[in-house]
Length: 146
Image 1 (cartoon, rainbow, N blue to C red):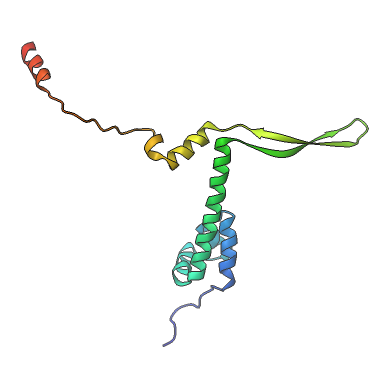
Image 2: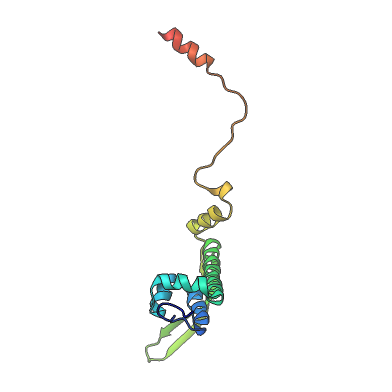
């Protein structure tokens, strides 16, 4: 029995292209735009072509790892090599290598900790109270007030 419907636009090289695009941060919508298909087609390709699904998944994991490293570096601060360029009066250019320091960012650190250790760092802590509590003194006080 012949397949019904339009032939697929999918080609084997799409998996490698998708992996590279996703590693650079592409979303499913952007993949669809790149391949000139509907987003639903990207979902279908992921279901029908295991190599495409694996490529998209691995590519997105690489992008996530890169963002996690960047967030970590922002949270703890980092140093990088740079150069200062100065134009002299005579028109010559002087380049001076230097190290630049980026201070730790408390907001990035809190974001990191809230996600890595939510029980310790979430905004609202839940505390378990052990023991017994009785309302008798409160009830007796209210009865005397009347």
